[in-house]
Each structure stands twice: as C-alpha cells, then as structure tokens.
Length: 435
Ligand code: NAD
Image: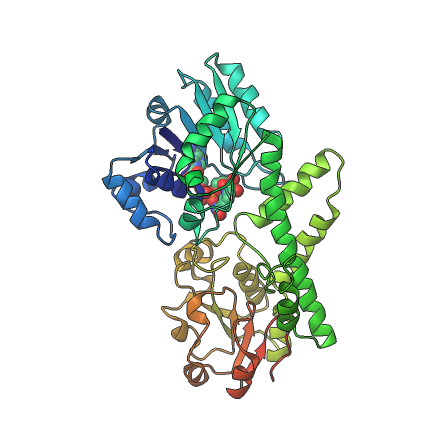
C-alpha cells in the first residue's frame, strides 16, 4: 500500500520505517528541514535501538522516502497516518493544534478516497472533530480512523513489529478493511487486531497509560511506607508480583515516572474528565504523588551532607529511562534543578542523552565523558536512570575516586549487602539505609 506518515518523531519514524519493512511504500513528511535532510542522507535523527538497520534496509529497498512537502506525499498515498505531537496545553489538556492544522491541510490536498489514521494520543472525540473539519473543506470521500500507538521508547522497533495488540477504531467497513490490509503481515503472525469504535479506541490509549502510571505510583507509595515501618519493598514487590493477577512488571519503585507520555496523558485524561464534570480522583493523586516522588531523595542528600552549598554532586543518568535519549519530564532534571537551587554544583553523565541536556541546561552543570570521570572528587552520587552500565560498577574504583562515599539510588540498582561490604552510605527507595 502507499502510505504517508506526517511527523517523524519517535512514533512517526518508527511506524514509517516498520511499515516499509512490512512491504508498504512509505512517504515520511516532517516540517523540520534539518531532520528531513539528515534522513535523506541515511542518518537516523533519534536514538532508538535496532532502528538504523531497518531504516537503511528500507531506504535501499526503495520503500522509504522523506520530504518536507506534504502535497507531494499525499498525492502518492491513499492512507495518511498522523504521528504529530499532542503536548500538554497550559491547562493540561492535550494540545490538538498540530493534528488539526495538518488535518486542514490534508483536506485541501486529497483528490481520491483517503483514510486518515490518527496515531497521536488524542482525547475522546478527536476523530469526530478531525472528520468534521475535513468535511468543511472537501467533498472528496474519506474516513478518519483511530489507531493509537503503544510502542515504548528504547524498544520501539520490537514493539511495533511484535505488538501485544493493534487497536483500530473506525466506523466504516472500507476503513477497517484497509487497516486490516496494512497490518496483515502482523496479524498473519498471530498479532491480535482489536476493532472498536473511534471513541473507545482513543480512550483505550489514555486508560492504558494512566493505569500503568497508577501502578508505578502505587508501588512508590508502598515503598515510601516501607521506609517508615522498616519493611523492604523488594521483598514486598516479589511477594505481590508472584500473584498472576498482579504480575511482576511495573512494580519497581523509584523516583517517579517521566517521559513524553505518562505525565501528559494522565494530565490530559484528568482535564478531559473535568470538561464534562467528571473528577478522576485517582489520577489527580497519581499526578501529585509522582511530582513529589521525583525529588524525594533531595532532603536525604541534604541531611547526609549537612548543607549543599559548595558541594559537588555526580548524577548518573539523564534520560527519563534507559535506552533512550529522550529527556522530556525526566526526574533527573527536577533533581538537578533542586540541587542547583540549594547551591550544589553538578557533574552529570548519561550514555546517550547528554547533548539533549546540554541544549537545555548549557553550562549550568558540567558533563563527564564516562561514569567514572563523573564521580571524581564528588561529595555524593545520585542515580536517576536505570542504564545497564550503571548496574555493575567497579565499586573499588568509585571508592578511590569519590571524595565522600555516598550513593543516593533513585532506581534501586544495587544489592544492600554489597554496598555495605564496600562501606558506602547508601540510600535507595523503600529499603533500609546502609550507613
Ligand atoms: P515527537 O515530538 O518525537 O515527533 C513529532 C514530529 O512531528 C517532529 O519530528 C516534528 O518536527 C513533527 N511535526 C510537527 N508539526 C508538524 C507538521 N505540521 N507537519 C509535519 N511534521 C510536523 O513526538 P512523538 O514522541 O513521536 O509523539 C507523537 C504522538 O504519539 C504524540 O501524540 C504522543 O503522545 C504519541 N505517542 C508517543 C509515544 C512515545 O513513546 N514517544 C508512544 C505512543 C504514543
């Protein structure tokens, strides 16, 4: 099939590349000229494991193209995916301006029956809104479909190619048939394509993300309570997760969730509820608790070091989670800002995300080339992201380099006994403090 993807961010570029790998001819459109030039030269503009190989294979196979010209791409396609940003507006609701603007442009460009597929995360009723907008501008037949994306950054290619489900919300038989054809290579391999109406499909995405954010936050509350009563959250987590109805995933406590999805989707669902007079009480608590959780280690650091003035603190991990360069709403940034406010200086290291943080914080902090250089002469080390390379450090090397042997671990990476044996002060989340 001939497909256009509008927006080549984490979702658009991965979807476009993978759809090309499923045999479709895909035209990716972005307004960012620099990005499009990079992609035309065969360079992947984001960090995403496995993406480069599939991307290059499909460019070579003449199935994957890039342009800034929406009209040129639309002319060649009868299916148009929107993978545009839906950031939180000032009041927390999803900002639909990107989606509606492009939908308006598409309306004046289509000349044959077209399916407009919304992959962006959007509030209930957006498919209807987009349909009404297009109808005002054209008499060419079209359908609007909701096809929310569930990929995880860091595992995006794998998630797209082997999803646990594909959700398609539509109200026309023709649109369903086209969507089934697009995903046929996946459904033939056993993937479940679940059909529903547009509104239910739009809400499925918000409900799934809000549920996961709630699961993480619930566990963070249990962890905080463990600290007060002397229980060990690792033991509690294992005991709970052994119950099939609960499962082990998303039970790891830490310094809160971040990223470009959970925070904004929780906010947007609360706001959508408010708009019709419905109060999502659980989600309001989730949001508040998560905000607090992000900097929960700061008072501990302050207590241990006395004052933070003129103290140098190393931060390992800047990305909002491992395997990505995405720093949107990352807990690391909140901690760094709080520590800077209190007079500390920061030396930071991340395997991939340093450039993105440099663009944001510039020389307000310093950056290290590797994790050991980062801890040279510091008063404490804070771990903000669960990167694999932080999981098994040479503790002897840390002992030699750090001025003060104190680790504040926001991701519970280490065994308490090991840290005790090395003589570190070690504070993690929901577990005993090693002194
Ligand atoms: P992103 O910010 O990484 O990418 C968006 C892209 O759209 C950018 O390249 C931008 O230049 C481009 N763009 C903006 N306006 C444009 C226009 N008028 N024409 C063409 N291109 C334009 O966003 P993302 O993370 O890929 O998210 C896209 C949507 O998918 C959001 O609604 C998000 O909530 C949802 N989503 C994201 C993820 C994720 O893990 N990132 C997962 C599932 C769903």
